[in-house]
Image 1: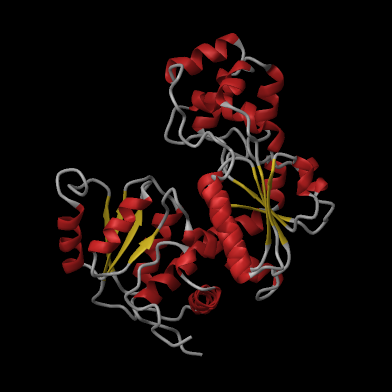
Image 2: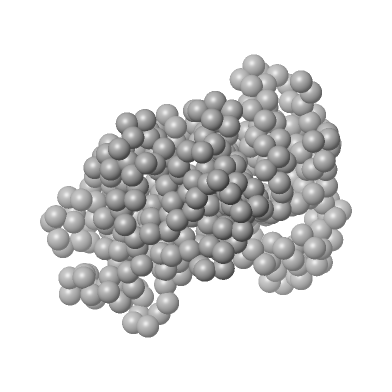
Length: 377
C-alpha cells in the first residue's frame, strides 16, 4: 500500500477498508509502539490540533486519543458540553471545527450523526465508538493477538464472544474476524425482559419497576445480533475469508474449540445499578468462569475484555447492586464477578491490560495515517 493512502480519510468503520489496509494500520501501530518503548521522539505533528468531541463517558478511549496526540506533538481540546447538535446545527459546528482543527475524534451513540458529521467535515474524523461499531477497539484487540500468536498467527483460529452486546460489541468483533480471518462464534441469550423480571423476587421486581416502569423498553436488551447485521457479516466472510465460519447460538457448550474468548459488561452503566438485575438473570449461565473456559477443551485459550469489567463487586455500582439482592446464593455468585469471575480475569490480566495499552498505539496509528504520515522502515 502506498504511503499516505489514508490521508484525509475518515475512519468510521472497519468495513470501509480492505483487510490489507487494516493490516497496514496494525503494522504501523506495532512500529509506533516499538518507538515509544525506545523513547523515540514522535513529535512529527507539531502545529496540528485534535478535537475530542465526546458525548459519552470514557476512560481508555479518551486517554488513548489524548496521549497519542500529545506524543505526536499536537494540541488537544476535549469537548463534552457545547452547542453542538442542540443549539447549533451539525453543519455549522463542523465548519467551525474544520477551520480550527486537523482531525476530530468522536465518541457517541448515534452512528447516523457521525456519518452526517463526516459529510460536512473537511478534516478526517475517527470513530472512538458509536452503537454501530467500535473500530479502534478492534484494532487494539487484533494488535494484541498479533503479539500473542505472532503476526497474523491468529488466522484460522476461533474467536468466541459470549454474553451481552449483540448489536455493537459482538457485531464489531464479527466484522473484525471476517476481515482478519478468524472463525467467529457469538453465544448469547434470547430471554425476554418479561421472563427475566419474572424470575426476580417480589422485592427485586418492585425495586426494578421503580426505576423502569412496566412497558418501558430497555435499550440493548435483545441478546441477538440483528438479522441485517448477520447477513452483512456473512457477506464479509464470503468476500474476504470464505474458509472461515460465523455462527450465533444460545448453547454455552459451543464455546468448545475457542482460542480466544471475550465478553462485555452485563450492566447498563448509564443507569442505576438496580436496573442490571434482569440482565444478570438473563446472562448468568454465560458468565466466563473457569468452568466455562474448561469447556473450550483448549488449555491455551485466552480471555480478552475491552473494559470496564465487573470481575468482582469492588466498584460502587456493583456493590450497590449486590447489597440490594435478597438471594444469598446470587449474592455469593456476584461477589466472584458478573460477566467474568475475578479468577479468570486475573489469570488473563496480562492479555487484558496489553489490550488496553494497545488502544493508545492503534489510535496513534490511525491518527498518524489520516494525517498523511507514516513511519519509515
